[in-house]
Length: 427
Image 1 (cartoon, rainbow, N blue to C red):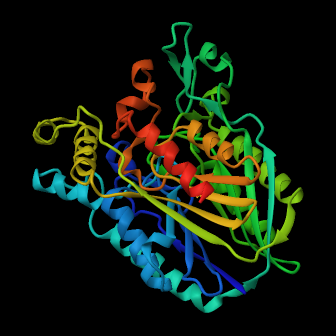
Image 2 (image 1 turned 90 degrees about the vertical axis):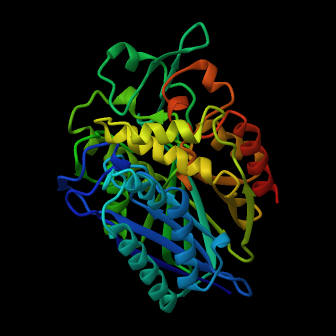
């Protein structure tokens, strides 16, 4: 027998807390609360499995490990069987205690995170997971469905005839010529996996690849259009819904987002419609013997990262929190480069798999995962351990554009990524 439970806890930051590791203004208002949402699966004869999505921009390095460790301890499993992901809405926190500790040593306080708030909400989430173990229910079937999302995703990297990035489609793109360029390479499908016992739905998981941001840098906290659509489905159905952002590192809504304020509600409606359609068209199959496959991988830092140079940047009297924050985050990753990052896959059946990947990963890796198992329904969650920053392709650095600037790992990571994806999906 397989048993299932879900949990939820509040991870909304207090006013004044840094957002996106100090890359954006701090929280000045709360438009919508943020949640940690999790699913616990206990296959017969196996240790529990935890899938958790955070309404945060990012979670990286040691803090990512601590979340997995504390959730694992709470439900009586090992950290290797816990996957934690962020939805990546920008005006939300990005905790990294190790990076903040470096900044504290140089007098740069409250840049990435402030006080012990992040530790307290992590403990509360672990407590919610522990309590959920008392509410386990039998789960006998899984459903799968997908639907095309209408006019949201577009590739951020608009290429020119010379093979270089001609333009960048940001969160919002006011330039009509850039918006008019083709969508580019995307995955237009929202995938939905449901868990059932008889006619009772226990939980719904949704997966879609896009930067889930219609506006940013506002200081107004919100889980953005993907979180709002998810909340709407949960309220309508009375069933817990959990949303995971896929490999959206080079995917934004920029083609369809001219910056008009009500676009957030427009995109919320489009995601909601896709969720409803994917659920409606789902097909069920027995859930008998799920398997968990893990592959630890060390992704090499960028070749130009140097400890002394990064320390000098932190020590410089820069006015920008982002300058200090980025240098500290890069240094934190550089110092832990020999600590493997988990790539994991939950094989629900022989034909249904969920791959869990680190970093702000390019859409090409999601498409690679699906191609690795053309016989199966493959959902992909990105934005796991974000100590890597962007995970681009090897060719991306020569092509230019924004993402290579904020990639903390080198182009040599591409071959390692593809090999690890193949192993977890075919294992």
